[in-house]
Length: 377
Ligand code: SF4
Ligand code: SF4
Image (cartoon, rainbow, N blue to C red):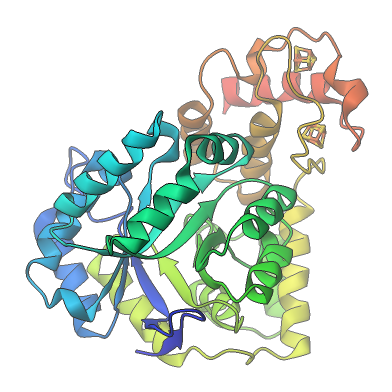
């Protein structure tokens, strides 16, 4: 295993981190403990020392499961990360309460890397108002948490505001060769690095989409460049090529995936991709993006829709279907992530949103197209 130093703490973290959000499951969707223990032990024996979980993963069962694993190994040899579920927090006391329960779940006296989970504009405002920074400071002083950070899902402007608001030790952001301009993106990576923060990258495979059902025009880009590497290697190599990235988190679901990821980690190095190779990645990115018929920047100027349609999310889900061609999974995700009453079918064609969109997207027209798509695919 290879290791990189967390800038402020100098902890030597394995470049491959184990994300405990997609563990092996049984036919009812519960964690398959036998298989999942085997996966965690394989990773641990191979030198993986960063284990990431969260209150809500696997219906709140991931933390207790990881706690049982920690009781089987030398706890001192690994770094444990978990997160405060900000959307479930309503008072300052809730924060202490969650942390106490998380320590109990994880069977430990301290959490090495503690994050505010999934910050966006709204949750950040709420966390600030409820005193989350004071909570983190106090928990750190009491030795219950060692390093503080936040995971993030919103635009760069919000990322910049949060990053500059406090002396964070690290951040966890979505990083893969497709999403260089999405959410925090490469600008976020550079900003965090300039503030000496560690960077934990998540979604290196975009939820597996960068390794499955590669569209023909994307595959042609790789073939033209005589790049015969596996899609997995291409995707992971791109993230590890970034010297600013401390840990690449992978949500592994089988022993085979653990072994494949470990093999890739052994070969990983920063700054190995040549200019020519990076241009090929750019062409592959463009080939993916060329499959989307509009360019929604998720600026949200079109919101709120008087009918409650979640316009950017609807456009985003449909764009994913176009980009990856994964219609069946995408349809499930669309219905899972976008509740009834907020979908394209709820649009009444009033046209208000269309006048506000700086990208000139004909939103009402697309709501019709998207409704047809999800009704018929
Ligand atoms: S205003 Fe346009 S670009 Fe911005 S989120 Fe809405 S649809 Fe997307
Ligand atoms: S056109 Fe549709 S999506 Fe746009 S504001 Fe009106 S109801 Fe909402």
